[in-house]
Length: 185
Image: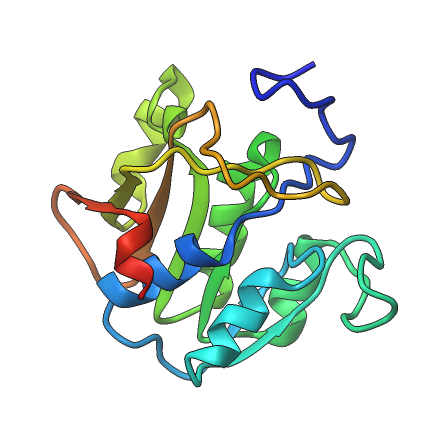
């Protein structure tokens, strides 16, 4: 059982609320070209991107929305689709590999929604200087992200999350900022 009180989903599929995607889009400059969510689940991020007139498409390792998205693992979908940017809520257990794969196949940005604890760890401490982490958007509201197939609670979650934005061509220390539910209006 996770800190949230939910059983851990075997694929690490957790559903992000629309407001946190909208808040990211309010903070970031427009994303260039085609944007892929290669871990799209039931398509929340893709739907929000399209609502903001972003050219967006998704894929997932499982069919989670009645054939709406191609079924393929991110290691196949990212190089196959060659997106300009990626916005995703990938499984935490593969996040570093996911980011490396995404950076190898994009030329604008890679934005991933992860637990804030992603900043910790010896291996990542050595890895961070080698990637263009430009911004970290910490959520001021705890984001409720229950396992896929369950209802998103109106209440906040129990874990701190942030959008980690990697921008090609960026060098230097990342900036830190905050998002909140109200940013999404």
